[in-house]
Amino acid sequence: MFSALAPYGWDEDWAAAFAPYAADGLVPGRVVRVDRGQCDVVTAAGTVRADTEYVVPRDPMKVVCTGDWVAVDPDGDPRYARACLPRRTAFVRSTSSKRSEGQILAANVDHAVVAVSLAVELDLGRVERFLALAWGSGAQPVVVLTKADLVPDPVTLAHLVRDVETSAPGVPVLGVSALHGDGLDVLVALVGSGTSVLLGQSGAGKSTLANALVGADVMDVRAARDVDGKGRHTTTTRNLLALPTGGVLIDTPGLRGVGLYDAEGGVGQVFAEIEELAEGCRFHDCAHDSEPGCAVRAAVADGTLTERRLDSYRKLMRENQWIAAKTDARVRAELRRDWKRKGAEGRAAMEAKRGRRS
Image 1 (cartoon, rainbow, N blue to C red):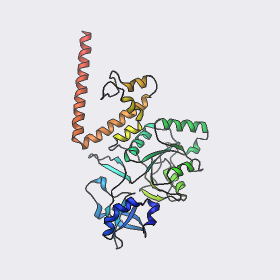
Image 2: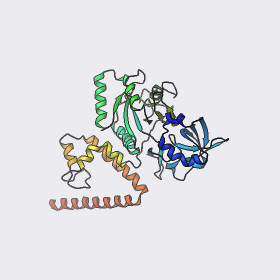
Image 3: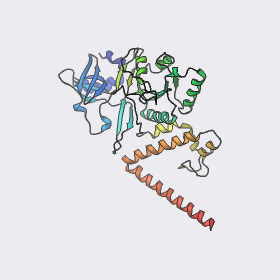
Image 4: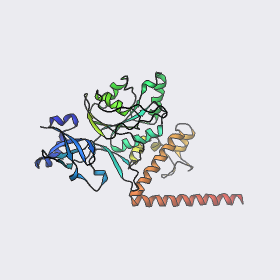
């Protein structure tokens, strides 16, 4: 009955989850766009407009978003989305809110395609940040170095790919030119099943890449500024698009701020080699700063680990811990104890230094 939804990811597990709503006469659909309390939902009978009034929760993490599967009225004017099926995965970032709320960018995602423009200097720290969020969401990340036609020397392009690979263990890194089609076949094969979300800064070439994958000009495209490579936010909503070769793609607006949200596991996966090294540290709570017997600092000293990568790891771990502390009293208490301990150690070290001088 619902074979028309198969190209959008419908399967037996979703059918089982939807069974109670089917008994109530509702029909399933996938949210392809959300806009001011309403959403476009693709159903077996076509795309309909539905009001989300009945699924507005107190928890902002449970609002309807692009990629959700919902139960909607079979007819009526207006139609309503009555319920949202439990998500398998969710790509979440923190907002600028003082309440440290999370913002869901896409739901039920299998692949997170991180677009990084080669029109500007590579920012490996930002790549690592995106990857931490991607791993934390439960999706498999893929890094796409867009505008590869701007790097005509294949040797230089190969070096850039390797630079990113060192910051993305276990993640495919592709150099792609959507303009000329170079590298697109490999990307199409990677995202040809399941749901992929396209992420990156404004000007990274996401909309051009989306058009190339869909095979039609479905997304508006404008040139990035020559001065800094920044785009003009041509994509203002998150849109779910069916790909002709299989799978679906969620295009997103350019992200200026990419704050971590409950991403400790994701950070650990991005910096897997540091986590492995840390197991050899003398102290289990080693901060990898000046503690004796630190295996991580030893790796920096012998050149097997770069200082930049360690700094990035510590920065993301601190940020994630800070976000967690604002919402979890236990984490706040642990942080306070840690600060007091480090303060006491610092004072003791100063006293010992003064004693040696006298």
